[in-house]
Image: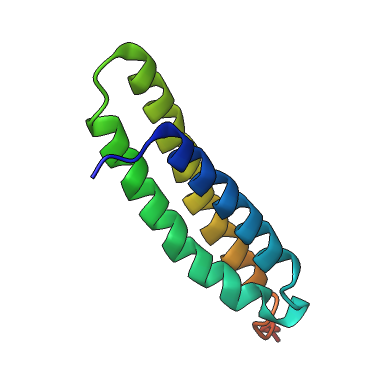
Length: 97
């Protein structure tokens, strides 16, 4: 099954719209669990970017694929850093005597 360029464009715009709507309506109390779940999704995005880079046939596709892999990697790492920082706010402080 071949997906046309218009279908890809439609999928991208739909994903951006749905993502914005979902994230903008999340209560503050759910941000930490949401970040943990989104880290999993960002990992899948990274795998997809690596696969897309693997199927690249010319230099432009390779450059775009490389940028995609770098951005997805930064997104995964940044998500885990933010989640760890947020979870650290809930840990009890140990006071040395």
